[in-house]
Image (spheres, helix red, strand yellow):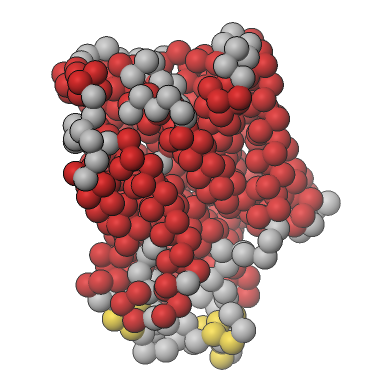
Length: 522
């Protein structure tokens, strides 16, 4: 093993050891009961709620996927995606956070999103529970797979190691400390990881800016790539078998293409996904006091702006600095290594290991949240509420741990399935969760007339439409080539509205709970 690699391992290894120690530290406290394990007894302060929400949301996509898109095709898709997510972050915290925190406690102290849906509509047959848990299992397994893919790409590049072995290693590390520590461990590690992520991004961006020659040097280099810096256009690399062609080390581009209004709206629709992201919504439910939410919102919005701006600019400046210098960046998938390559070039090996740990932080903070959410849905919402109502707390937590193991195995399979683009894998899972849960969250919190049949119909419509649009309808081309989240979200909203008006209005008890949630403070 080369000395540089050994030093990088030391830097990354120290970080991983700290994360596992945190899991062990919280293990005894978190194992007290399911509410502690799954929701930390609603004990998150402003900083933990805000940064853990954003860190768990952004994942390895932020440090690899988003810079990779910017590196390969320029500002177009990367900028509008980031803008949509930024707006979605602000609106979600401003509109949903406080109401969901209060309503989840009024709804018989619901501690998971599926449980909130069920108790909000007094679903005695647990239909909503089962549907929400199944949707969570499907799309979160895809999400977890994307994070394990991040581990594999990172470790195999840094250490020239076997991809399969590195995916399994990363999965094992995340599973260990999530199994041990529960939601409080997840929240604390996400807080640390969120800070590390944004620091790593800003540090690499600063070094890249100066190494690339500042504004003048970057502008001169990018001028050779048609429409690369056009916000209303997109660069079109000339590719052969998915690999960009080069002449004497210079990457070749076509004339570029327009990024039209429909495409921009479709790309910005990423922001709609926030309303249905359980890993974010569960942080709203875990905030200690509703009065803390304003502070959390400000912290989250600032973090989001800094992180996404840095991620996009790293991809753009990376193209100016690295174009023609690395064959590993000549495909859409390979371009996702731009952050890693810059970190290795700019910093001494042991410091590079610490900086690259930002990617580990992103992936771990997301995958631990996804695994815990799926485990809570199946153990608390399905096993206990449907199959064995008298199950003990210990039994519920063992079912949760077995569920995590199962999701980990599925995630490894997805990571090794052949789709090598983190950005594309995440976009599909994001659409599925956003369309299935997002409209229902909004209608549940803000429209008293929403009915139980409409809730079921809207949830299923959103999830099914994403699958059909992605795999069938979009292949028709033309106006149908839009991000599947947009049409699925709109259709789900329409179904909830129409079915609600055509079915019996909610009971007086449900309406009273709704009115109480509008003004409640905890």
